[in-house]
Image (tube, rainbow, N blue to C red; front, side):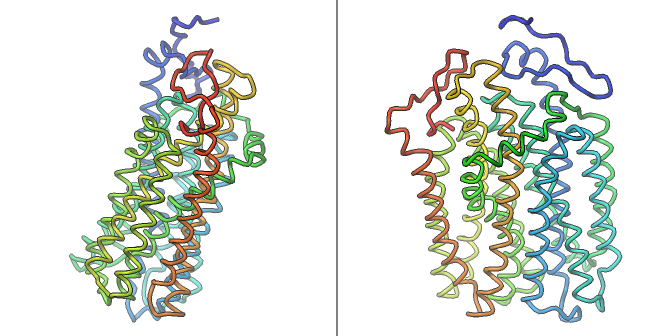
Length: 461
């Protein structure tokens, strides 16, 4: 047995497996755990980053597809909607994959799988290819969306509760940056007169690098493997589905707008592909960079509080977008859209921080203490993250379909923005009713981490 002030022996690295992992023990964390956890975090970010780039390939490939490709605006919105849908659905099996194969092993596999959609797109990307072929190849790109779920599930197990907001925010934010990076690469290539195959050719060797780095520098955690039942337990918990709704409002917005922003500028304001590309990267970039800040603020002030007021701000930004759309003000529309991206990124960090806190709270309510409570929280929060991430990504599908219908019905995106505003109001109400209203009932609010720790306030999660 290891006393509270004694650092456990260094973890076993046989076959890149770690058999003992106790990040809540501060001595273990300071002497052994933090260095290992950070190394796994950084290489997880690399793989997830490229996964996001591959997933959102078609948000920029459609900008290359002029009249000679024979696709209508509705065709393009349908294409990006289906890519988003696959990326959402595959997050569920990717969550299970960490428990079956191990975090390091699955990172290698999932990174290597990104070669399939990238090489396929390289092969078909030319005028004369049928819409059905583009749609099929686009669906393959959806597997890039699954990397987020497995990465977050894996990294969640490496960090103590007090560090999860920062760690998960950095992991997800570094992955999210894959969206603006591929858009910036497309901008440079379009500006230089290059074609889409140049962009795809750049990513093929990068995918190989990510897979090799994962093999060389990442680890598997023994206590995460063979726990596929955790996902079933998480699916039976009401908080998994409540948080899924809230995550639709943040990440669903981020990924949906990332796919749609350039097309909205082209179809509503007559921007050329190059003009659209000049600004489409900015929103996803700022939204990605601020996600760790959202996690840090949640660590400090409570994820529920930050999320609540973030939904208010998202509602205000959306109202401004509606006005700018009706007035046909490109400058105001672009500025408000970028602000909405930033807020979606901030909310991504704060809502995901809530998840481990919620399940830690449930463990304490069951009477569990110390490592037993921490293990319970890690087990269910890690499993629920994949499910929440999958449902949240479905929001991106809804956003693209809403834009498609709005343009078909009204010739602009105004109708879609009205629907988004209503949904942000729902998210505000749910956050207050479930996670903040309870604070007034006298639930203790504490940030201590001792074994005698009382039940956390939901406002703190």
